[in-house]
Length: 236
View (cartoon, rainbow, N blue to C red):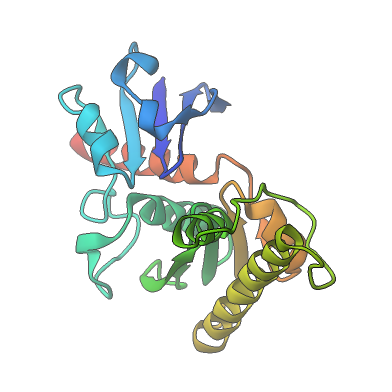
């Protein structure tokens, strides 16, 4: 039995792994995440990109995934691992475990990240860019009159005739174009076999870009689990 926790910038996703089955628990706003809100009867393995949230959980023996402590499942020697996000480490592990290599993962969340793993399970790097939520927020917070508009899963086909439609056309089509270019450049340089879309906004991008295959919502959690299991077995 194991509690898994993927701590993102906006939400934290907990889950329970037991008897070969992963049970997703309700998401928790990252700003509200505390030890008391987690199941405490099992070991906890986590990937966190929010240092403040990690600090609130300190002192409870949690295994925090990193490029330095991932059970040797991925070779990070070709990149600088000092600032590599734990979610990107987990994505690389899950891609190498479950899909043909070389593989590319587009993690579509608050930020859009790309992780590339070659056929020798070497991490080749990737990309980091703002996601749709962050683009919307930047327009809202950085201007005097532009509103923060809600999400839509439909890709707008025509230029906007009012401010809300114009933001949606600019941000949503712009985000799709951004991902399309990043994937195309990666394909040219790395000869990718598997192009995967993960994260909370994966469905939107996979629908817009046929070269992407949306993975299950527990994809990153399985990467955390695999690292914890390899680490446990090595210490046994």
